[in-house]
Image (tube, rainbow, N blue to C red; front, side, top):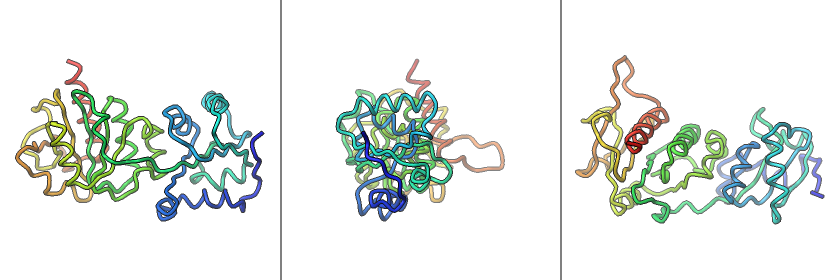
Length: 267
């Protein structure tokens, strides 16, 4: 039987709750995962969970049943039964679903072994908002992108809000972190054609071919892309803007480009 925890003052609960703060995540080398679907996807992809906290009375529905079944099949998983009060202490805002997990940060070093013969790579430079990171990961997963690279990121990749916004797809898409210089060198070594999305891009995205090995490079909404991507082997592309706005949200831009790349690759 799992150990039962009934107090929000339990040291294990207090340590887990601190992981809402970036400093604590960096100090502990751990993150916290909210949600039935997200935890189930982490387990399905073999993401090593250190602790799993479950509130039985809150676990309802088909997805909760699927998570229970998966947990029952795991042998070396530290599972704790918690009360509703403890679950609400651990969970993000009012989104308590009865399942919260703690996991070590994975290795996010660049790894060319995940690339296919004709890879599709997403690069986000200077990303600040974990919600955008998560949304882009969902699209990257949907189109079967090989990996996502956060270059000079300003948020931690496995921020619990990014995990939640990705709906757990962060566990399915290889996700790396590197400097912009390291990322540029990695892409060159991989032999991919590089397309940088810029408001002032010389070529419309509709006029280029993403059919071969491709990297789509996007910058932060606040600052766009750095000058490092103004290189001879990088094509600057734009999305036509026919209204009064001069740009789209970065996650929307990523979705347009990724689905266009997917469309071209299916023909």
